[in-house]
Image 1 (cartoon, one colour):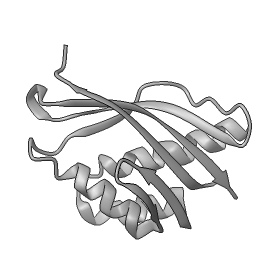
Image 2: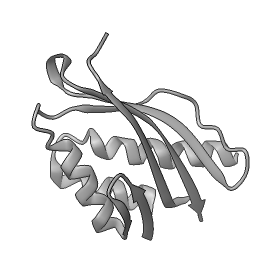
Image 3: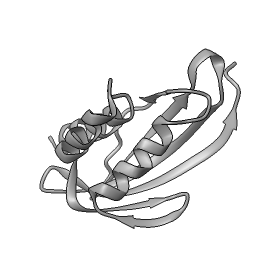
Length: 124
């Protein structure tokens, strides 16, 4: 049950990267995250849904064009933390970024996200 809850929150979080319009990003993040969420990302620590929204919108506005974020693994939840792998691709075979995120859940929502991004690689 705990892994299903984590997977639902994670999939909603990932769907914010793929929203049909920027105006849907906040609503999706509000469903997946606590209001005091902490994001540990490539640029350091940020707090709150607004900070995560800025991070998501920056990725959505990649110079190569709007991309797509996909969860590429199951959700592994060995304890309080859940982890999953993802890949972000830009249109027409543009840069590909892959990584693993680790999230902590509180009351069925993500209250901490740690982003571990890997190398940018062209699509095979």
